[in-house]
Amino acid sequence: MRIKAVVWLQRFVAVTGTCFALASLYSACSSNRAFGDASTAGAAGDRGGVPNGGSSGASDEAGSGNASGEAGAGNSGGDGDAGAGDAGAGDAGSGNAGECTLPKDCEGVDNDCSQRTCDNGKCGFDFAKSGVVVHVQVDGDCQKLVCDGAGAIKSTADDTDKPTDGNVCVVRGCKDGVPSQTPAPLTAACGSSSQFKCDGKGNCGGCQVDGDCGLNNLCATYKCMTGTCMNTFVKSGEGNLANLAGDCKKNVCDGMGGQTTIADANDLPNDNKVCTKDVCTNGTPSNPPLSNTSSCGTLSTCDGAGACVCSDPHACDNLQCGVITNGCGAQVTCPNKCTGVNKCGGSGNPNTCGCTPTHALDCGSQCAGIISDNCGHTKDCGSTDCQQVCPDNCGSKSCLSTFCYCTDCNG
Image 1 (tube, rainbow, N blue to C red):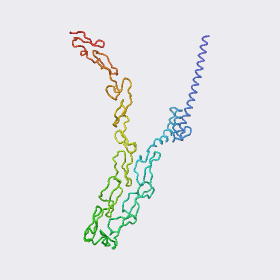
Image 2 (spheres, rainbow, N blue to C red):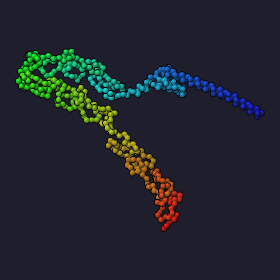
Image 3 (tube, rainbow, N blue to C red):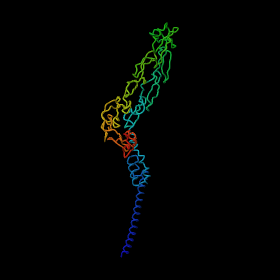
Image 4 (cartoon, rainbow, N blue to C red):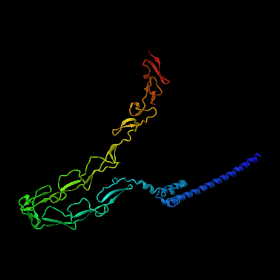
């Protein structure tokens, strides 16, 4: 009976083992089928298919759909991983949204035809309409500077912008944007007090001395040569005249012997502040503040309102404690971060964490072993010379256990 029972048991194990193997094989096949489905879903994501949201690759949902494919397919979801999830524009869109907070944060320079803009964190430009007249012009060139509608400045003909040289016996004008000149008629008056007449050839005759032609100044020189006024005038916009520094303006000659004032973008209004800009805008001075990210020195940053503020956020690093003077020269109280045997002001260093030992590490007559104090400092007495530790009257010295002994005393 025992032998039959054993045989029956062996047959049962064989049969159940086969069933277990078949069940495992079926499970593996099911897993492979699921694996293939997930891989297919991943590939659909790569093709922009709907199953894993690949068609909306420009949004964050494409990334999550891709992740689902990766989890289902295990290591074989590479096709799904290569889908639009990696290059999802949703991540890129939010990452580049912070180019600016104000127009002044953007690159470039504002002028009459182009103004910087900051719209939803994106830098851009606002262009003036075509034909808008630029403030700064060149006098007497028969031209007018205007905006072209795309941010640039262009020159157009302006026959009202007539040139002048101060010689009243020459009539200057413009024709289709080109300067022209003709002699004044014989009836035109000339001279320092209009006491003479023009000769019809562009000259003022009848003078006897230089003063008859005019009074010299920084913009004109008057000469009477053989009865004719030969006057010299400094060109319009030029001249070595006195100027007020920092008003964005420049005093120049007007081309007729007199003076005028024009805008000067190089005459900056320097307010000697490190957190402001020195700006000239069409002859108007200003000092706008720098952004609050601008550095103005060691440990110092501009506050966005024109002031330089010193800040030392790391003053209490390196186990500083108590009241200390930071890098800005101000007193600050650091929290007590000392732990264990360390105390604030320990080791004889004020405002620093450390431990002051209650006794010195002295080996004495100990010639072996390691000793320590209450602060965790240690000393190896194994380097101690036994000859130096024992009294000099010892004839023979030896280190027994950890102490030095005299084995032969001489006194």
